[in-house]
Length: 146
Image 1 (tube, one colour):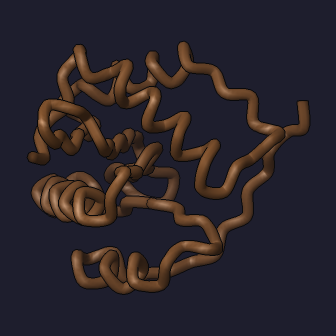
Image 2 (cartoon, helix red, strand yellow; image 1 turned 30 degrees about the horizontal axis):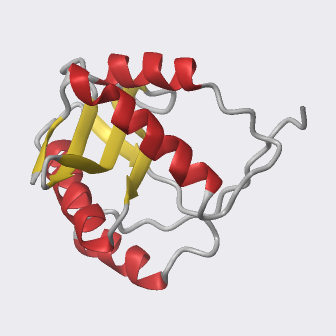
C-alpha cells in the first residue's frame, strides 16, 4: 500500500535511506547523519513537500521524499527528490507513479529532479519516461572525503 508518511514512519524512512546509500552503490566517504536525515524527513511531512511510504504487511519497505523550493531559473518551484528507494522494484514503481501524479497536480512545480546512479537498470529510466520524467541528463556528484 502506498500512502502519505506519518510521523511514526520517520525512523523506518531513515533506515531505508541509510540502506539505500550503503548497500547498492556505497559511498564510503559519506558520513551518514541519521539526525539530519530525520530532521529533513520531518520537514517533508509538510504539505509543500512529498513524503510517501510503501507498506507491506505492516512494515515500511519503501519511501520517496522530495523537497520543493523556489526556482532560480523561473517563477515557480523546483522539486528535488531526496530519497527514492524500495526493497522491491514493484513498490518503487508505485511510489514513482504517486510522485508523478503529485508533481502534475501542483501547477507551481515546473521542474522535478531525480538522480539515479550510473548503474541504474535501464528499465527504470524507461519507466520514468512513461510516467512523465522524459528528460535524461548526466550529473556528477562531489562527496567531501572525511
